[in-house]
View 1 (cartoon, rainbow, N blue to C red):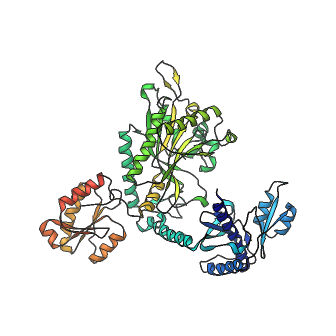
View 2: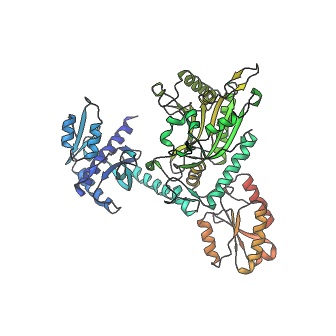
View 3: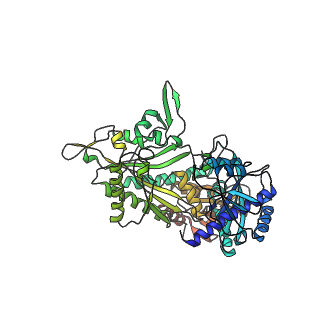
Length: 585
């Protein structure tokens, strides 16, 4: 980390202390959580006597500016645990943190003005060194991210060295708000959440289901051409399967609790892997059968903490683009890199240009706890992945202590148009499950060997991919992926029959189309279609009926009059087949 970055982070953390002092001046009985610097700014968590509103932020800002103008010094004091407890006796959250500090470790307090906080530091010299900031929002946050602990109120702020940097950031945030997949999901009627269903469990509306079908059809077509065969597995399975796979206890915290029937404990599945292994083991396998590529769009369920749920990006129900490849060690590099190339093919289709491939490895200290205890196989498989990536010229970065419990993996980090970064795809090596499930194949010499297993999900889940694509395209989805590709707008009721004839012809070409025959005015229908970001509108009046043509209005606003319907239909069908962004003449 360079000094410039460190200084900015120090300034942001110091500004968080100033915000806490300002909040205390407004709410003298406030209880304080933590206030770290984060990317682009800082936040602080509070327990307050009432719920904050956006109208509170200008007053807190005014108080902060007064503290900054007084140029209050930040003063460090090293104290004993007993002294810290005495000074912060009225702050239960700080007391909890103090209790967790190991005996003999230095405890430091920082004071500026009338405010003293438990903090390791460092801080800037005085409050006057704080540059430009803006309080940007209020949110709820469980204490220490635990949904069973108190809900605190978090104030977020942006902070930068210059006003221009702050203005640029706020402009980006405005664009981010427009592209937020949660907002677009509601406006475009893609998905909803409902309290009676439960948090993190999306309900896909017809438009969302149409997108899912398109993505799944794309994957099925490509996977079939790459030699995958499709399987289906149940949503629940016996506990013994996950004990055998090792997911219990490694993965227990992310699994829904078991249910018991007739003395047998069952889990809803958090992943498809063990069931695919059972399919592999269902009959004897020869080296001639390998590689065997089993694919499934299976629905899985994971109990993500409430504080970690985020729209479609972090959910509890997910439809995963899953597959397991069973291969020999000689086949490993070819199969592993075929998956990497599959990523790149998909990225071209979805116009994804910003991504980083990360090799996630184990740590020796995690063996037997976080990772399967087999150091030799960890080192061997990690070396195999490095060799495959390096020999094929694929750049990657290495991240320790982020492997799957059963092997190393390549995760692909992508960045959406609004700068939100997350893992979209994964390519994992599993060296443990073949042994656990006694998976075998007969080699060329008639001897039994264990296959290597590659677990891959190049399109992540429907949930995460669609959330990403909504932000990536700002809701202006490619014509092939758009839930409704064409809306036909008859000018009067006398033109409805012709419009319906065109609708039938387009549906016969497997295009998604509807006639808007409502009694609304034509301009209102056009505005509504544009707001819904529908790629093509066909305006049907007397001239179009008489001449057998259409007038095309694209969502960009471009108008194409008196166009042959057959030409439009064939052109749109080609756009869909070519995975084009928009219809073009």
